[in-house]
Image 1: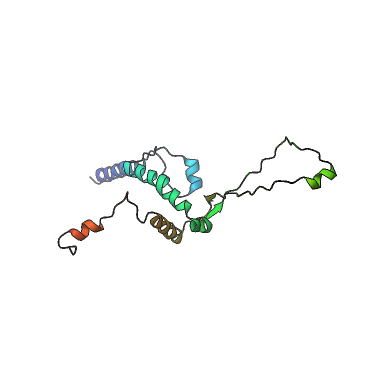
Image 2 (image 1 turned 90 degrees about the horizontal axis):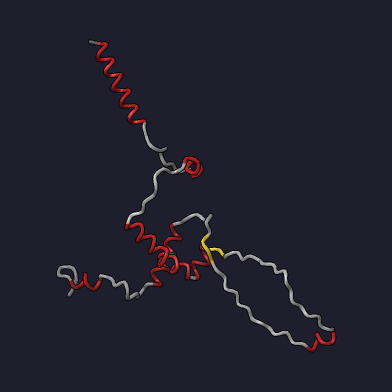
Length: 161
């Protein structure tokens, strides 16, 4: 009887341990190097809320916040401009006597500096608070998004009216 009990417990233990250890893919890790090597076997499916959030971030939040000058100066860096060298040069040789008589038109160039997010910069709560303040300031009296303050104040037991 003792051998039967011991054999049964051993068999149950082996079945339980083998069932617990089987997985389709390695567990996810926060280690980026490990994740790049191990690969992802589960395709990522976004839900309706995630799609809505992504759309709002790309079409409303980012453009509004990136327009604010304080945010640009404090949290963004100027975009690097690429210098393009031209192979064709059109120059006229001018005699020294004619150089002094010729007026060169002065063109005022105002270069617009484009700011971009720095991908290496770490996120801070103060940055989020500043960006949220800039977003709220830009949408202070937005007629598209009415608040419920008036409705709440008209409700019996809550409001004064």
